[in-house]
Length: 153
Image (tube, rainbow, N blue to C red; front, side, top):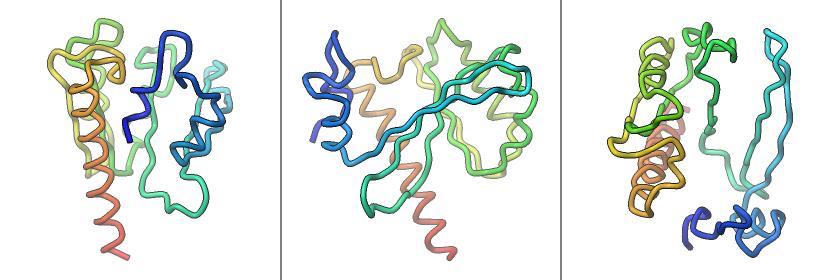
């Protein structure tokens, strides 16, 4: 099955499917919510989890707000879970140096940084081979960490 990004078109990220059909096809459940950060800013967040009885092997957080306005940048040192940071090296929206700073300052002992040369801000909007590279790296990282966690149990 093609990566879900391949189904998107100019009118909808779900292509010709409804959101419900799209998520059912890919075996995930989607939800979203907002919360208010310590500075009083309302932050929107989304979650995708496996549908049915499929085990959760890992979690991905798409983190936005590498500016002083987001307020969480002062808390990088509190990140203690295994951490994978990915960023486009030619991103002109968010400076790749911010991803490097998150990686450097995160308190996690197990942290990995991938800055992709020649890629831009929206890594899923890259040419297919770049999307496959990024998602392949993320999936490999999740699988290796899930296997290590399972072996430790």
